[in-house]
Image (cartoon, rainbow, N blue to C red; front, side, top):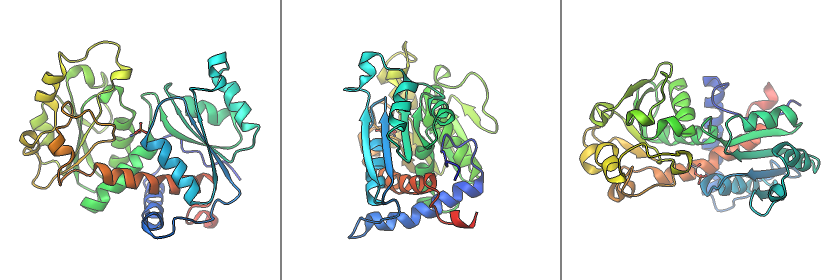
Length: 309
Ligand code: CP
């Protein structure tokens, strides 16, 4: 059977996104139930290969694999033979020789998951590659939004912050648009892409972005990806682009707030908004486990409807 890679949202049609969301919704009941154990992936091995740090993505992939009965092996760059000069491809080939069924990869270089998929025989799942894509984040954002807004057709979602350096902004805007939402990107000029994104509005004014928004996604300031200061100070950023009770009042009444995490409290989001009753940040974390269960099943060719073609 062909490996069911998940390298990005770009190649997924709306029907396939909906199929993953539908399965994740059902699988979430296992996560919420008294017995978190199934045997769908019994006998399968998942290697989580993280060249970059992670809390949410790595732990939820491990948890998802274990709930489904797979063996999960966690590899991280620190403590590995990378420090002895082993290349990315040699590391991949070495791990593939141990015959895993699925490799979940996070790497700082855009295209690294695609490169792995071209060289390996097992299924590859992209857990974030540079500023390119973070498909499971996009899917969990979509699941969380649908839980609260229903169908995303015609809904308006503002994505605010360091868009240019964000794989989340790219994947999530693609995913939400494919599900029928309107996406508006907002940030200072230095944090918005230099070229237009097809079908996506870009504005520099937060009030304009939030006007009539059903949801707003605040992005983390990617301090590890920016070599120079892209705004004068964190205080200035918070004043013009931060989500606070004052700025959230510009959105639709009851608009919900998301953030991929980890959050910089007091910079892109004020603590009373992050912890407030409109925040779905922890709901996103729960959705993440369910989405990764669905994605691992898909990688193994065992997602709902797989057997029907
Ligand atoms: N949102 C996200 O990818 O978080 P982690 O870096 O903690 O995995």
